[in-house]
Length: 399
Image 1 (cartoon, one colour):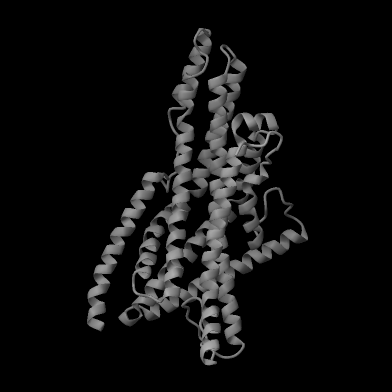
Image 2 (cartoon, helix red, strand yellow):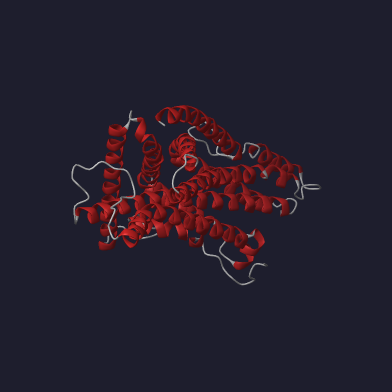
């Protein structure tokens, strides 16, 4: 489909989806006033959501510790462990946003200032195609994660209704394995406990989703700026020093933004990479452990979501590497033949400076790229093979 000829893409379009999820959990949106009643209410919503989700994580750990060592609960433990990892990682992710809220807002303002503001410029630099990719990826990923979390949250309710229809009794079930000091089967207690677990599960998913989508949106906007610099360098007229200086300034600004993004997200990326191998392994083990069809569908969806989530981070990290690496080649393809020696020398300095590609790392331990994705999958499969080798002999003894 050809892009529209007169449709102006707004900067906010790139971050609209993550900011919708931010609004659901009380995180201030880009450009939103902070000292208003609405802002204070959102602040209250955010911290109450954090407290409830943190409480869920604590009692999940208590349940895990109490059940550990009993092989009859092994499947419960391997079902609970990825949920615990998911919740803990969601906390790390949202705290990355909350602790760097001012820096993130400043980064978005600077990207907004660099964003092409006219239809002609947007057509020239392919902004519409970038925006279309952003919308497709973000909406698809959001739908996948919302289906996943509500499958986990509501599947017990569906099972209870089906049981009541078949034999006329309520077999009360909760979405997650958690320890409680009271009998949650009692009337009233069950409803409150069920809602508290649903709220915790939903908030964890939104913490996870909103942070990853904002990360992807920022990386995509940085790639757009690298493409703009590459286009301008390859189309610059000979001896157009003003255009060259403009390209250098944009390039320097984008490099600074890349370094700030690296500093901001690098710790959470390390935690993400380390935990994802274990989560993918455990979810894959659950999907092959002879569970019920309903649980099988639930954990297969969890596995697909985990694989897609890590792939997105690695894909956009790889996209940044590719976008930044094209600058020296674009400069070489420009109209420098016949230009003055001073212009050629300046262009050569630009080419030498841009040979250092911009990349994001997980605290310098690993580069965020598609190569890292293959390593994570390989590690997950190794863990999975080891876990199956440990479980199957013990399962035969139990029988």
